[in-house]
Image 1 (cartoon, rainbow, N blue to C red):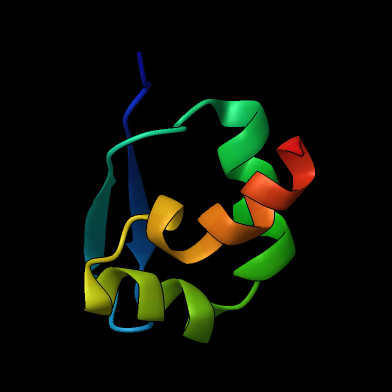
Image 2 (cartoon, rainbow, N blue to C red; image 1 turned 135 degrees about the vertical axis):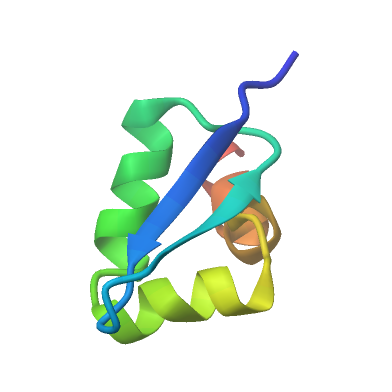
Length: 67
C-alpha cells in the first residue's frame, strides 16, 4: 500500500502550482527528499513543470538505501 501526496510550489509570480506524488508520500521520507535534492526555487519549479512524481526521480537512490 502506498501513501500519495501533493507537492505544491509557490512560484516567483505568486501562483501556486502542484504535482501529484503517487507513492511514498510519507512526510518523513518525502520531506527529506525535497529538502536534500530539491532545495531551491528553480528545482522545485522543475518538479512541477515536468509533472514528475518524486518516486520517478529518486527511486534508484532509494532502492540502494533499502538494499
